Image 1 (cartoon, rainbow, N blue to C red):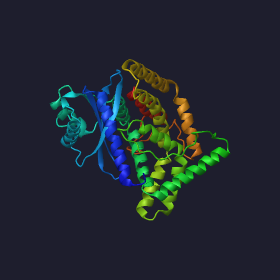
Image 2 (cartoon, rainbow, N blue to C red; image 1 turned 180 degrees about the horizontal axis):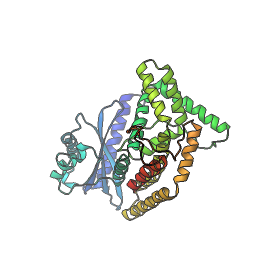
Image 3 (tube, one colour; image 1 turned 90 degrees about the horizontal axis):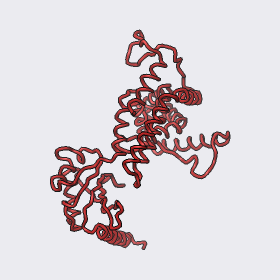
Image 4 (tube, helix red, strand yellow; image 1 turned 120 degrees about the vertical axis):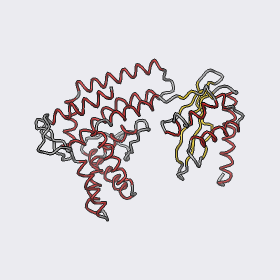
Amino acid sequence: MTSPMIQKDIVSACKIETVKAILDELNGDYFALLVDESFDVSRKEQMAIVFRYIDRMGFVMERLIDIVHVEDTSASSLKEAIFNLLAQHSLSPSSVRGQCYDRASNMQGEINGLKMLIRRESKSAHSIHCFAHQLQLTLVGVSKKCVEVGKLVVLISNIFNVLGSSFKRMNNLRDSQKSTIQVALDMGELTTGRGLNQQLGLSRACDTRCRSHYKSFNNFIIMFGSILEVLESLALDARSMDERAKATEHLEACQTFEIAFMLHLMRDVLAITNELNKCLQKKEQDIANAMLLVEVAKRRLQVLRDDEWDSLIAKVSTFCIKHDILIPNFEEQYVSSLRSRRKLANYTILHHYRVEVFCNIIDWQL
């Protein structure tokens, strides 16, 4: 059992027996393909192939059949790998009744994407785009119509790159976060309990990964003080002037009311759609209940728009006071960074944040 060769033999034997049981359950019937690509630990591209089918008891089953390493991720290479797997198990491409992929162009291309290549072999292999995935792409897409959201996403991504490029910086971030949590516990601001106050990490937001933007914004708010502390130390002590300049730039950008406001607004908006996303991915979900969940999410967004502006501003103000961020006078004229200060906008800072940002983002989501 301690021999790597024997361990691999045992795993291979288990795989063979598991696939046999799945194919026996499939019983030569129709099935759908679910395919996704990712990197393994050695950064080699691999493709997971899942079958969705109805078993003999009438239940919908989803079973991982194989993980195939692919040198080339073109649609034709992926199709060849899939068809080789089907032939290996004596399955016909004509039995494929559905395809489910992400929005990658090699998968969803309308001319030479994987879905079209398989459709040419099996006309009944209809392509279905996951509803939760569509929701994620749509909500992120409409949010980025607001330039302030785009700036926030870029800033968080850049800070992730700066801090995540060094184990020492990540250790400093964890140590700072640990100290912050301990101080909060000592002051009674946090309570102890199982699953509470767990160590967090910076989370990279990805348009195609469900809930990643919500997690990214939420973690950034929780770790904000620790992030500022590490950026400040980099701005003072980084080896190269380029690193110090980048850290200073990110530190200055973080300590603005606009970033604090956008972080809390997007966290609150995406918290609502995040719940919808999780519900849509439940296996027992049906389309009628999914439509009800959509309506509930829309009502919650409308309540946020109509009734929760004051509570949002209160949260942002408390956050700004805690982190020594200047709160603007909302009655002053708004000055855009894209305009000369001589050309003041004909509306106030309050109008900008409430109408042009807050209301617009929620309306787009709705």
